Length: 67
Length: 538
Image (cartoon, rainbow over all chains, first blue to last red; front, side, top):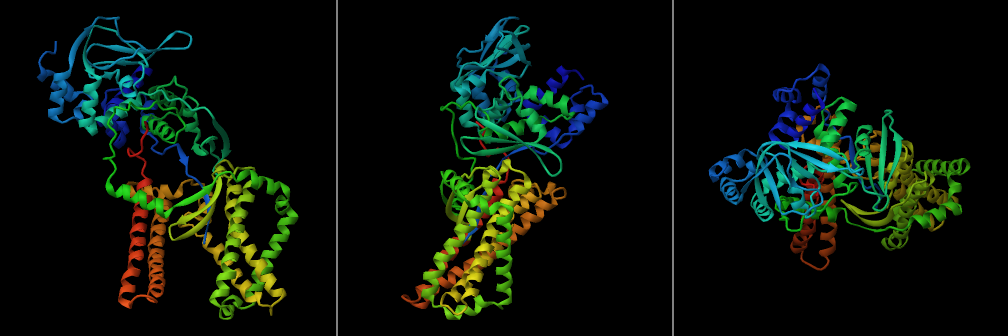
């Protein structure tokens, strides 16, 4: 899949909420459904969507002493 | 040509995000649209210019380009039928952030700013989707004044801690998120970031990229252009119970803090307290702690027996100041241990935390420290309480027949109880931070409540689930006890002046208020754990 095809896929994801939902429930099927011609590596990339947030705000730490 | 309004209506209904509008609003909007044609090569909007319209592509192909610093053009996107552009300048009240040029002959529908804002006022779902679209087209830019520090977790994962030095806010980035952070330079769009992320990590993760940018923006680590003041600001998305829960949480976690304490504590630490943190100093403190505990245990509960020897007045006059002193020592234990690891104290103060008053020190800067250092700081408070108790026991054992002896035994008992209670991990006391740091699970409480909300993650996040359930059970039990305790004491106090039945009724009022507050406090804890659209990005 060319970079242009990847970009089109991302554009679709950004502009189409229903596609976003499809990607969330079954990323591989959603990507294949667009008609994108994927290599094995690209299929694996579509499958290995990571839903864990890789960054987060760290909450204030207050070491308290209960009275 | 799309002359009939009915054709425009059909077109709008199929174009994102206008399909979210109700039918009558779509019809109204369609009547406000003007159709215009552009020949190939002509510029529709130009970067830097101001504008009062946005455009919907009916037909043709257009390219979005920006001018780089070296005056070369860079293509950001290609737009086709159904695409909306030009909305950013209207929603931000700023100049156009890119140039849009027709690549082929193009037919566009013009939507004026006033009509767009009117549609947003009348369609919250449409407004939400439009703002989402705006966000996904952002070119995120890091704010200046953010310090970065690296650390390696116990699992070997390399992490970056971002510190906003002005606001003292911290953000943790995994190596994946750091990859994205380094590219948030006002050049990369979310699409660029997603593509580069795909090539680097071999995962198609637009959701992850968007959420990372969104979290950083909400936490204030990115420069965010403000939305136009003309935009309808509605609090309607927040339900009454959410607002009430937030108010209850403010009461349950009320606090006053003095911020500028770090300089004084640093001076005290350098002036001599650092000696306690040498090997010799620690050996002496450990000997005192152990000796005190042993004497206390072998004395066979002297503190309980001594209760009979103390009048209420003596307890009040002696124990309250002594108790305040042990609390100060507890917090000093945390604060000076923070200084040993070279971190900053964000402040110190007093307040209320769920069931009782508290004193606290802000040790947020520890997020930059190693795991064992963070755990050491959290344990230092209870350890200081144990030391205070042991000193009291040793003092009372030197003069066992003095008047002070039974009171010192009381101080020791309270100090030891304080040390044990503060190791409770089910509310955010010292034990919670020990557990969180030991597990390398920052924001454990938020994650636990988030897991509780999402039953799909129960199987994969069992630890969080167990923590959330245990914490809720604990809050429930302690609430019940606290409410009963308050009611009994208030009733006993009020019945000195009022008939028993009236005193009993009156005593129920604060108990009920506390119950409601705690109920809403729990709701707030669960609610704020959600990562979602209630948080405002722009």
